[in-house]
Length: 171
Image (cartoon, rainbow, N blue to C red; front, side, top):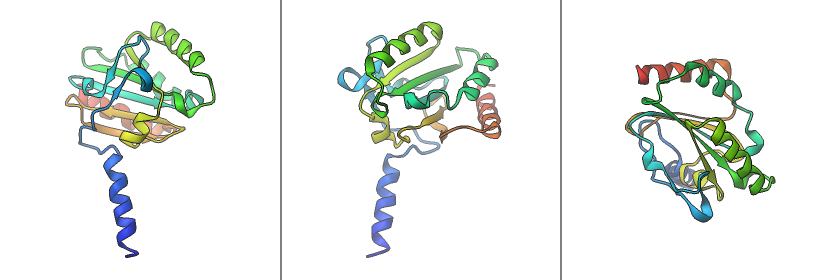
């Protein structure tokens, strides 16, 4: 019995975690649980036909992966082959939603090629097993399969590794 319980727990947890090489469970953010900054629905099934880098971030951790963001920006990838998504975990902070939403609208204007999304109820933490109160990076291939995932700060070696993966996928 002692060996069965941990195995069952690990098996249950893996059902919710993102798996490299697989398309994650479909998730929709809209209305009371979030959505795009412009008020429209965000559907994870739109992650296809390009290489996508998704940032899933606690607002208190918004600067954690600035080095990676800047490295991506410097690459100037062809937007017909590459896209980025920034999803903000609004439930992970004490900051008021209206203040964060106002900031996101400004960010959307500043970076029109990035899709900005609000997650008001930790949907991606629950459905995809992303780390709460953190900065998560997920890279998706053209078919929507997870290619890379990381929670926390990317060090210089990890940044190089992720950029190499993206370069190989785009070229």
